Structures are given as C-alpha cells and as structure tokens.
Amino acid sequence: MRFSTTFGALFATAAIAAAQCQFQSVTATSIGRACNVGPTGCCLVMARPTLLIPALDTGNCRLDLGVNALEGCCGVTVVARVVVLGDQQAATPFPQFGRDCMLHIAPLAVLIATPDVQLPIPSTLPPLTFLAQGAALIQAPFGMNEVMTFTDALAISLR
Image (tube, rainbow, N blue to C red; front, side):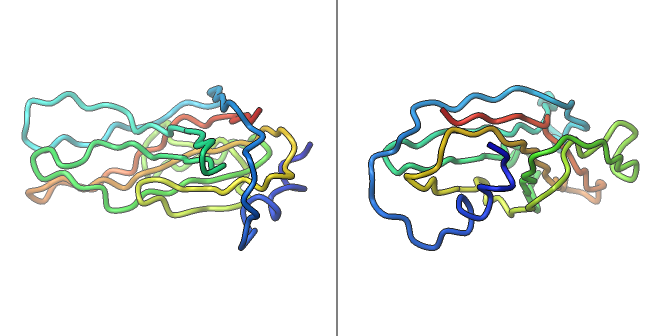
C-alpha cells in the first residue's frame, strides 16, 4: 500500500480507539548515507554520526522515531531535530551543510523531534513501508560553528 494513501489516517488522526496493536515488529533498511558528524566540544570524545532510530511501542500502539545526536559533552547542544517522512526516494543536495549532504527522500511531512517523534498507529492500518530521514542542528561552545547533520535515510516497515 502506498504511504501517501495512509498518510492522513496515520498521522492526522486526533483520537485513536484503544485496541490491541496489530503490529509486532519494525524493521529499517538504509537507502541513503548520512552526512557530517557533530562537534564534540573541547573533549577528547570521538565524533559519531547522528542516527535515526525507529522503535515500536506495542503497548501504546505507537512508532517512535528518535533522532540520536551527541549532546551534553563539553557544552555541545542540539538546537533542533527534525524527521522527514515520505514515500519516494529523491536526491536533493544540501551543499551548504556539507559536500555530501543530501535529502534522500521526497518529503510529505517534516516533523519536529524533541528528541523523538511519536506517531500513533490506528488499529485499522495495514502493514506498510515508508521512508524517513532525520537531521540535527548541533551547536558547539566557544564560538564554534553550528553543524547540520543528516542521518541515513531509512525504509521503515511495520509488520
């Protein structure tokens, strides 16, 4: 089933009837590379890529999409996190953020993550696959430049 046909039902539902969650697993496959690593401040801490981590909460029938970026080390803060959702791959370059920075999906929605996006799953939703990519704006202390990091783009399947 195309993601766009279920998009409104999945993410715009104001109230969801309490029902047992029909999904038992979530899988994620990379469909595009991450770019940039965030600053670590003045510590001797290795930089690591920002990650988009999907987790299925079957008790609440909810999909959590976490944008995991290094934060709190030597004054490093994450200023903003976003998750882009879509149903088609794309290749939109963002050279202002880095030579290899690219949005790998055609966006249908851009959601603010704090640090997670929590998406309720309607009990009538059939199994589906959609695309997601996260980004984080990371600020280092002492006047260092802000860095925009992009996660891998993921094909996420709910089964």
